[in-house]
Length: 240
Ligand code: TMP
Image (cartoon, rainbow, N blue to C red; front, side):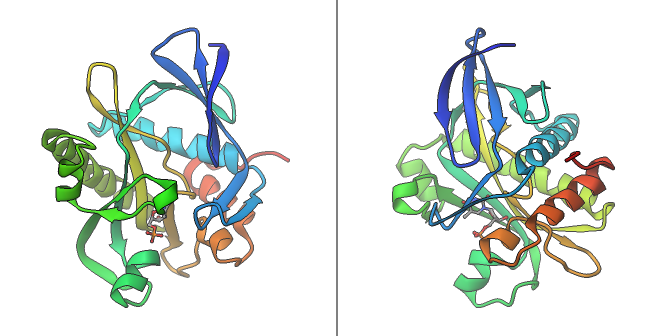
């Protein structure tokens, strides 16, 4: 598969067209941003770890009945994916209070939720990705009711599977953000990525943060944290 034209460069990824109009190549960068671009930096080898973790999880989720955009990993940082039109929603599932939920509801970080919480944010950088509910989504026609029901069903299926799987690696899945897209025939598939950029992952025993919060909160140790997640998932880390 050959990259033809660069379609888009985002905060953490470049997306290329290929000779097949239905396939794109995603190229993961080490660049990290937080606070809607206010904080910028790099996390060495993040692109490799996010590419490999995302593909690893998506392959397993396909087997669990969640269709994804994943086609083939072609290098450490590059993956062939199905072309989709992104549904402009950040779909967030939370198991333990943290981050913006803790702030909004005054819940100490680490408070377990009695059941998973599903949230939606409208993807718009200029507006700061505001939280919206099902009524906003349907009124604005960002997707149909049927699509939203499918998205919610898949989001909980992703959560159920990942909570159990990550627990076997002694990781608590605190919360995560996923995105969905439509294939040319309208099928809803899981798109974007699943990585320590988009999940909160805490060591089950020590509660050590092994995700992008280390970068967001200037805690340091983000490179080692990403490597530790990859080591637990794949038994290996990128070579220097
Ligand atoms: P939050 O607590 O800041 O709302 O984040 C919830 C989850 O979503 C957390 O795992 C981080 C992830 N997330 C993203 O992947 N991208 C984003 O732009 C934001 C705000 C959160």
